[in-house]
Length: 110
Image (tube, rainbow, N blue to C red):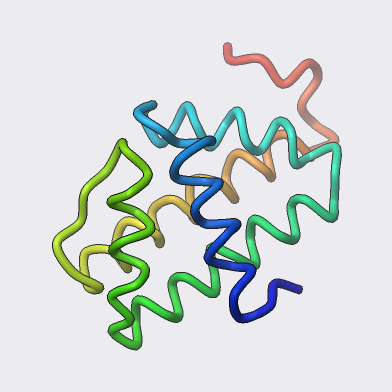
C-alpha cells in the first residue's frame, strides 16, 4: 500500500528514472521486467500510479509538477496528467501481465 506522500516519491522515481526520455512503451516493458520479480515493488508502482490518477482526477496540480520535473514528458494540467498517467498505468499492466504470464517463455519480443 502506498501512503499519501509516498506515492509522490514513487511517481517521481517512475518519471525521472524509469521513464525519463524513453518512449513509454519501452520504459514500461523495462519496469515490468524488474517488478515482475519483486511483488512488493510492483505493488508500490501500481499503488503510486493509481494514487496519482486519483489525485489528477480530483484536480491536484502537484501531479503536473511531478510529471513535468521528470524531464521527458510535459503536461498542461491535471486533466492531461490524468490521461498520461492512465496510459502509463495501462501500458505497465500489459507489460507486467506479459512478464508474469506462464505462457511467455523468455519474455523477449518476437
